[in-house]
Amino acid sequence: MNFEQINLHLDAYKEHDQILDAAKYLIHSFDLEHENFAGFGFRQELSPNSMLLTAEGELGKPQMVMIPKNIFDFDLNLVLNMVAHEMLHVRQKAPGNVIEDKNEREFQAYYEMLFHKVFPQIPDVSDFHRKFFGNKALEYYRRMGEGSELQHKYAEQKTEVENLINSLS
Picture 1 (cartoon, rainbow, N blue to C red):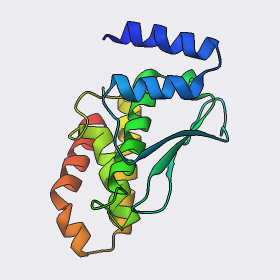
Picture 2 (cartoon, rainbow, N blue to C red; picture 1 turned 90 degrees about the vertical axis):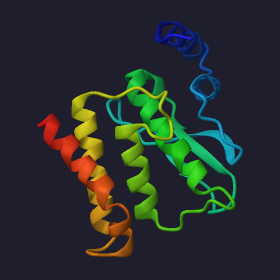
Picture 3 (cartoon, rainbow, N blue to C red; picture 1 turned 120 degrees about the vertical axis):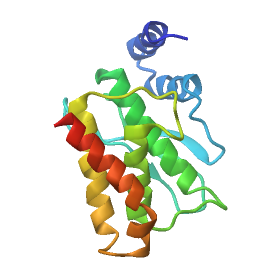
């Protein structure tokens, strides 16, 4: 299915105020589903030009992805990357797969938004957003603790992120 058809479907859902159904359609269309996913729910909108999504639930338990009602007012590539970020958290918090450290989870999710290793079907965002997500990845890398085991584990990916940011500057 192409982006034009997907946008037409999303517009129809939006027209009928079926935002949660549109989100389900999106994760199905881009093969983002996971057995630890408990569904979508609504969270408060931040503003007309910014959005926040969260994966909520205890570690090792099913996760709800909370989205703002205005999610489909944003660029589809950006929405897809934001949803994929949260769907990666759903996997990271799944039984038998739990990544305890929040900084590690966030670094992995922002890294995924840049390089699409887990979800290769997700398109790139604008250079502006790639730079923003790259800087967020580096922020979580720093929070892992100077010289920590986690920093050593992700040193190669950190270099990839830095190289990408430098290539976009």
